Image (cartoon, rainbow, N blue to C red):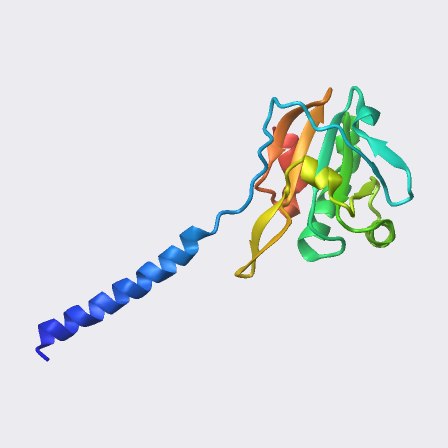
Length: 181
């Protein structure tokens, strides 16, 4: 085979391989909630780690930081929760109330709160009622694997209106993200 033809064949194979890699990277689209700033917040009611009922109506006059996270005591969820914990005193002085929501049960939430001294409630939404109402269940990717789960999202809600949606959550600096907007 002449050198030019061999070189062209190699380039063609590299281009094809490159196209496959690019195609794989561009085919996955992470789920993002359909809710946006200005929308009425879905009304919700759920039990926290102690079985206490928490509802949207409990936060009149406050800005509710309602954050959805995948799982108790995992690295990203712990970093996010601890970021809010570390700035909790400052957040409450600015009239923020913080509530976390995941699919974990009350017992799991109790352990998570105790282990990391979290000063705010966590709603146990095992049947995904609140998760579905806020449209945060969907396709996501972790370590190259695509699956359905809670897509980490935070809603800032005031007077039953969504004032901000944070869908690109920085787990270690989440409290700062909340206060920026």
